[in-house]
Length: 210
Image (cartoon, rainbow, N blue to C red):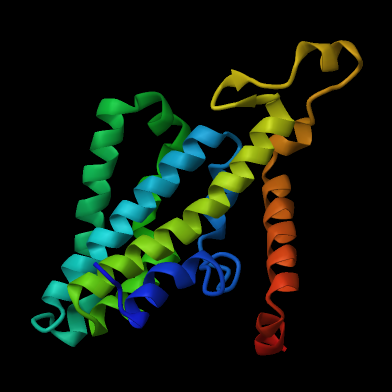
């Protein structure tokens, strides 16, 4: 099925020029907190994408029946219900990862990206565009987490997804893991480098912010 221009923008825009982390600087807290390893980064990315997509759809379906004065409460109830479902699924099928993510699964409820999309998009658009917008913003948020988690685990532990990838010969030659990669400030530095590269490749974004 061919997508309209608006649908393509909703889905693909957040992956690059409308990225919620790189352009809007939202969702930074979890990007710093859960990316010391690649596995929790992947799981968090998937969880946020699922919650954002389905919350967008539900709010879009209800948008004409929600009184304006209680719309935030309704949004929080919908998001909290979806986060609870995701959290229980993680406890059942990925308990170790759920422990690594700790309270940050529950804090998806307060994720600025999620609440922002409900307000800015789902309340004014139909279910299908809202679903694509949720998927796009979730993936836009998620690929940043995956990149940060990749480099932090690789350089900090010498592993990826728990598997050793740096040859023992390098360690024998004097190579050592960079323990600083396990600290939150390094996540901020990696995100800053990604933003710098992104802005250098998208000059128009620099003009918009100046």
